[in-house]
Amino acid sequence: KFYSLTGHYVYAIRGLAMEELHEHPCSKPKSRWEISTGVTCPSATVLNADTVTALTDAITKSFDSNPFVKDVTRTLLCDPSDYDDSTDELDIQLQIGSDCYTHVHPDH
Picture (cartoon, rainbow, N blue to C red):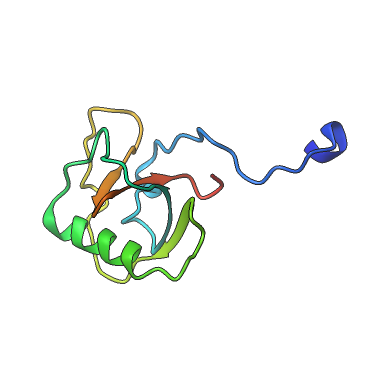
């Protein structure tokens, strides 16, 4: 419908907030991460070691070659309750090497 109104295709939608625990990257095996190459995460998320290991493993082993977003499949277990519940959104950022990975909505 968007195309019929504007004549433009929608490839991604930015800013879709994830606020529910079932949207945590440990709640399901697949997740999407926005890549900021050569950037230090402004708000790297403090997570327990098992969660960091599971998510880092999934990101680094992904075969997705898109330079902007990476779809990953997690094979190691991690805890979906591992996040800062003082905020309403699940804004998870991981620093992996010199790149910052931000967990984003699957439709991002």
